[in-house]
Length: 200
Image 1 (cartoon, helix red, strand yellow):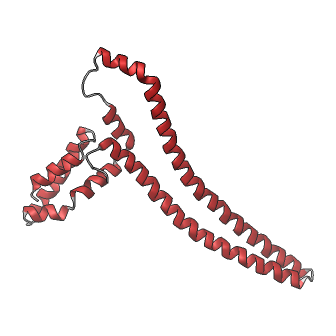
Image 2: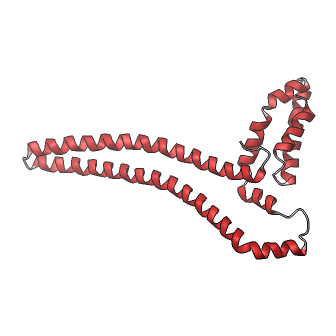
Image 3: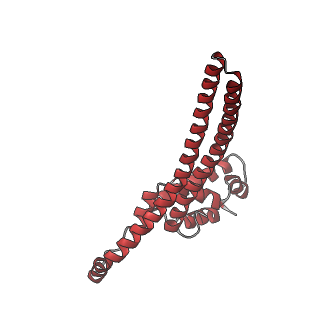
């Protein structure tokens, strides 16, 4: 792939972004290719060294704020005619309700993801607090001469401590998964607005 094919493909994949962002990205990668050519690479080597167009476009879309993408997409490309304005006004109860419902569904999914994580964090804290309480009770029972009860409390405390450690490890994995899923949701929303396969 030569420089111009690369830049055309990048421009195509970023076509849903604001024009100034597309222009800035294309210029940036054009200069990167030129710098590599000046360092002695061939044009094809320089383009290959930059990376895959799809991955680059995904990263650019990922770092572009969602509000900026939505603003660009909903901005009219031309002045609305009078009958279009009337249709928008008459249909507003329907399309505003649908947009609000879609927003609420996406928000609910996002909240559920993080509520699950928060629930397991609370369970982990409960296991840890129970283990501490049992160790403290075991020490008190031991000094008061209740050896068997102290050993029972100590053993139960160790079980709770182990459960706390296991839950902590699970919460760590769960949190990483929730962060990954949250990013995928946002990237999916961006892809809907950008279109043309820029953020797959």
